[in-house]
Image (cartoon, rainbow, N blue to C red; front, side, top):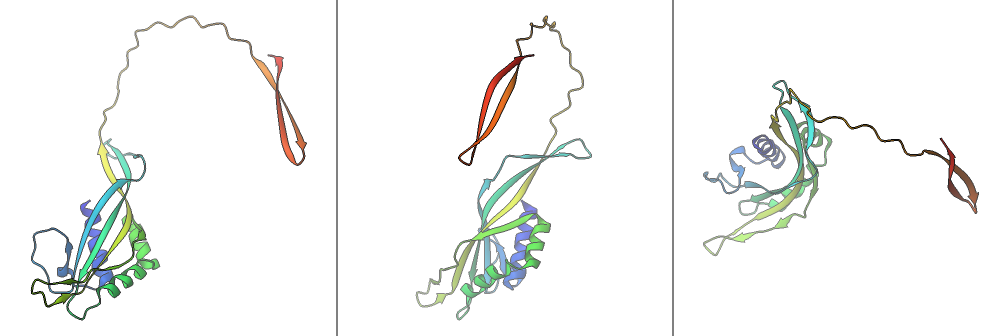
Length: 195
């Protein structure tokens, strides 16, 4: 998850054109950078498919890959006169470019959908000043990885005795008749000769 967060933050810094000091994860204890500021939050992480066994590494541990999806929320707080909605709309366009798609592919991340950009401009505590704000939710997919050491069965001891095999049941061939009736294929299956 650390690598995913590191990649997403780096990508947002580049695409939003906001100073790195002013792009950070929401709900973290850090001084707020100078406006404009972008906050990021990952939520609604869900399993997309069953875990896939990717083989064994050099230490004989299973490498298990878990396809997952989540929502990356991006919010921008801008200075008076700023255009956070325009920044996020530009972000959505940049996410469609081949360069960004290739960068995401190399990191094992896909941005596969986006919600509409929301203008969430708010009145500050002084009740006089409006702070331009906007938010967008990006749907992302990525793979979680887990290593497992289930152990190896080195010796098996069987103590049961084999039973005498039962007499095989009668076996018959099948006869299949294929005919075309009014443009449709008709199949008839019958019991054939005893084998």
